[in-house]
Length: 364
Image (cartoon, rainbow, N blue to C red; front, side):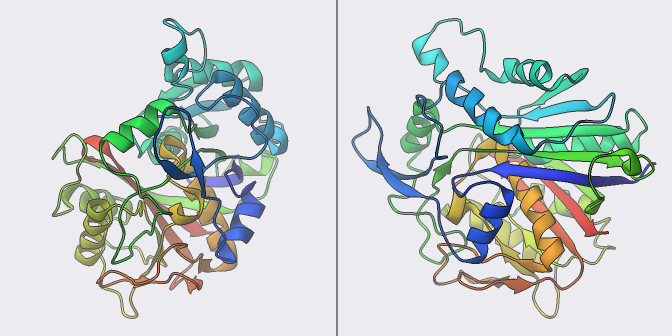
């Protein structure tokens, strides 16, 4: 099995690109702003990206997002495979056109391939674990010798369709979400995108950037407990975490968690962490969704890119929005960074249908 490394990454969130987002996180800033969207009675805190001057949920907005996102993308090595992660893409095109020719999840990989001149494409649409699973799929292809380089792109927009869906589920917080807070009351939606360039370690010297981390473990599971609710005993996430850490044979320095700010998701994650990890001092855990919102299919890619920043600085960022930490066996902080216990970090996500995924990154 070939070793898999990361050689470049960038994101675009309501706080800016990767460097700007990381700096804002360290300073406890939030990109969530309360907004009124046509067709909705309530205002919702949303993480909208500045400069996307097109209709929410539209393909035109999606294309402008890509224009901004790929400004920092280096020249790709020959025969780079492309894996795209998204949940709904430009889904509002379906509200305005019966048969849209672009912007849907089954279109986006092709749109990107044409833009980036890549030769092989794959699409992952696995709810809110899409981005993490896309990273895992890329790592598995490289580790198995199927290819040498994989560009993983995650993207999702805020749309009327998705906003109305979460509103119907009564899952949205009327104020900014508060991940892992004792008084948390729902999630906040964000739009965002990110890319991570993976390579085999042997081939990394031919890639455009320095090796930043090694992917040393990953895990995917599905508990299939409920169409939306997570399994209360966290069986699926526990399985994914144990796969990623080789049955806890690897020292974990911290966790960039899913942390949506909903009552049931955060409780499930804390149960999983208590079952899998029993560190002294307690394992540090953070969530970035209180700052940028839940970016759905892009969340995993964005959070893995931010985890590279964590490894470089040896800290987890504050969990913006967290005021009073929920009872747990892990270390949670709302206004301060947390030092990593070791030069490694787990990034995990969970999605509707009981899907769970986790990736372990180690500093190079």
